[in-house]
Image 1 (cartoon, helix red, strand yellow):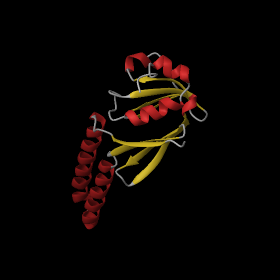
Image 2 (tube, rainbow, N blue to C red; image 1 turned 180 degrees about the vertical axis):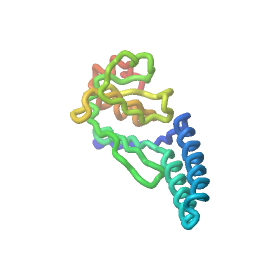
Image 3 (cartoon, rainbow, N blue to C red; image 1 turned 90 degrees about the horizontal axis):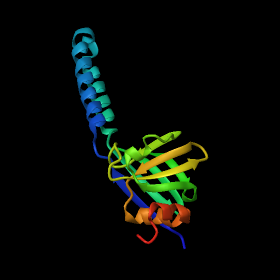
Length: 172
């Protein structure tokens, strides 16, 4: 029987996102102000370019993450303002060495080659983690916000001992 489950989560704006928006607005205003004095011939084009650039940068902070589980393969894509999609990670659930609810203090002293955060919040609250050795990225931790269906699908393909240690057996 084939298994296919997908979920899209929208990333909430955090402090870093608000700083990017503020920086775009202040930088745009500064460029427009300076172009009044130095680029009077092309002032209208500068305004148009600054407005387009600020709009593009600000809307590129609207992120969604798509989790899809297909027969034991978990794929995570980043969708930027519904205009472009980028594959972040593709993994086989059998590679998972640990899974559980994410608590930053539990991972503070652990070394990972790469940390991939695809959860609703930047700080990883209300999220789950996958600890695994990926052929391309090495020892990684993936922080994500799955719903029950995605979590059940991942659980059914991870090694039984990992699910048992995480306390997932019998829950779903």
